[in-house]
Image (cartoon, rainbow, N blue to C red; front, side, top):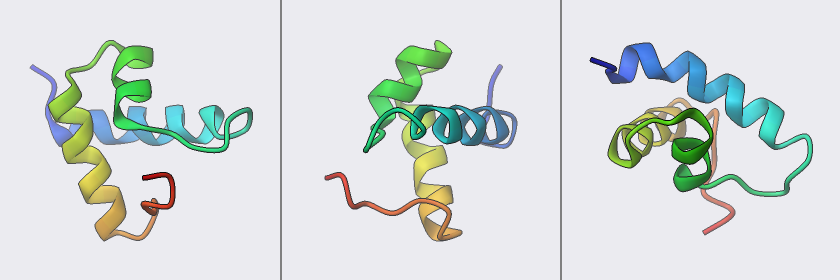
Length: 59
């Protein structure tokens, strides 16, 4: 079972590569790209926002 701790490094790496070619990244992009549950990705996004590694400029 994938949890936030296991998913976080995968999501971070996906976001890094995704943003090289795209201006914004949404949880749905990451969930689709990695085959993860949307809600799990949203939880990781929340953690990254708290750590100031991700901002909500695209919403």
